[in-house]
Amino acid sequence: MAYPNIRWAYTIFAQIFFIPGQLKHIFTLFKKDILLEIRQQYSFYGVLLYVASTIFVLYMVMGQPEETIWKALFWMIQLFICINAVAKSFLQESRGRLLYFYSIAGARQFIIAKLLFNSALMIVMSLLSFLLFQLLLGSPLESPFTFVLISCFGGISLSLVFTFLAAIAARAQQSAALMAIMGFPLIIPQLLLLIKLSSIAFSSVLQSGLTFIILLLASFDVMIVVLAIILFPFLWKD
Image (tube, rainbow, N blue to C red):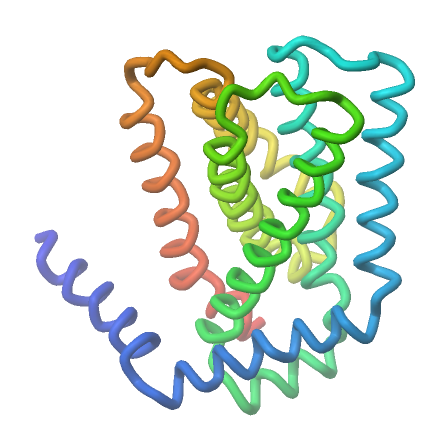
C-alpha cells in the first residue's frame, strides 16, 4: 500500500525540481522576495534594531552570563527574530498580488520560493545575532565555528516551521492567534533539541546521542517541507 504514495511523492518532487520551467519560476519568485527586501529596507533594519536592542538590554541586565543561560537566551531570541522576520512574508502579500502569482506560477513553486527566502533570511539573522552575542555577552564557546553551523541549521529549521504556519494563518485571516496556537507544540520540542545540540560547542568532550538529535531535526525539517508542498495548493486555491 505504501508504493503508490511513494511514487506519488516522487512524481511531485520530479515535477518541481527536474523541469527547467518550474525551477525558473522558483528562482524568479525567490529573486522577487530579495528585491522587495532590498527596496523595503525598513523591514530588515527594523528586525535588526529589535535584535540589537534586545541583546543590549540583556547585556545591561545580566552582563556576561554563564554558558547555560547564554545558550538559552540565544535560542529564545532566535525564536522571536523568526516570528518577526518570517511571519510577515505572507502578511505583506495582498490578495491582488497573490492572484497575479496564481496566474504565472504554481502553488508549490510559490511556497518553495518562500521557504528558501526565509531560510536565507534566518541564516543572515543568525549570523548577526551570533556576532552581537560575542561582542556584548561574551563567548563561553569552546568551538565558535561549530556553534555558527548549528545556529544556521537551527535558523533554517525555525524558518521552515514559521513559514508553513504563516501560510496557513494568512489564508485563515487570523495570523497572530493562529500562529501562536499552532506554533507552540511544534516549536518547544524543536528549541529543546537545538539547545541540546548546541551544547557540543560549549565542551570539548563529544556527547552521546547527538547524531540522533541531528537526524531527528533533519527529519522534522523534511516533514515540514513535504507538508507545505502537499497542503499549500489547497490553501492557494481558496
